Image (tube, rainbow, N blue to C red):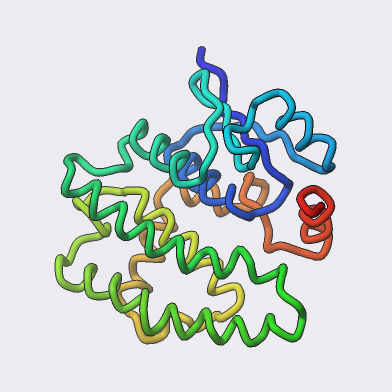
Length: 222
């Protein structure tokens, strides 16, 4: 029996949360080794476990994968979440890249100065409502299907749902002008593997708190 993937990252969302999401959507159980100290990171670096000296790092199928997008692509391809042909994979990749740009704003938000955090919520809302959500609303409206690409679950659906739910934590009515995205959110959230991940007790991480922020600073800051 193949070993479970092992995720190396602090005990919080960050850039690893998308990896947790796609593994969960694929129905793959995984283990986690949480980084809590600078010494743990140094040990991984000194042992040549981190190709570019950075985490996220995922041990999977005998490899030590780094770079979030590469990790996501590998898992999605392995578990049939990356389309059936080159055209579909390219569409999925475009949608994921755009969504990750928006998600990055959410990831960095807890590390802003308190005075800047509320301003950034306004900025995130504007970018979501003006630049990103209209794209996905139109895709869903025009093809009339349940999923973004190929009428089957893909990495694009998973990352978009992750981003929508993270935004709704800060701006509950963010989808008020997007009925197709509202329907999409309900449908994708009820896919059995994803529904399980959204339930209490899963490995989905809570919104970042002060403890997580301090831990990240302690590990990564010089």
